[in-house]
Length: 87
Image (cartoon, rainbow, N blue to C red; front, side, top):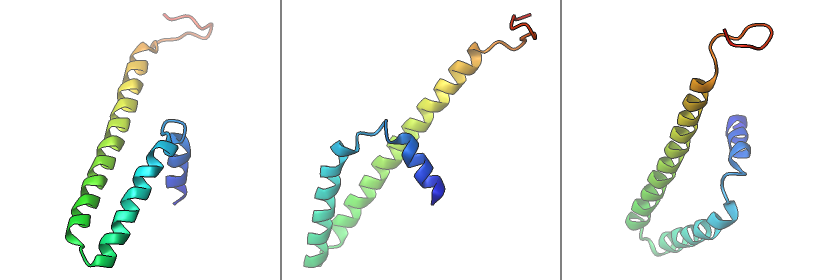
């Protein structure tokens, strides 16, 4: 749980949560309405699709960070002497 909080704290500046909250509130309202009426199939599919979208967004973020790390890694010189010059 602490690891999830750490990741959430790190991603907070990247994700404008105030823009996502209305969508989450809308989905939760639809979920409550569907459960109260006894319709569970459609909302399950909708939630599964929402999870797939979130996984795709997370995968895109991980891929972007990995690519950035590889790009920066290539720019770091391999041999640095004690006086700070590359050999």
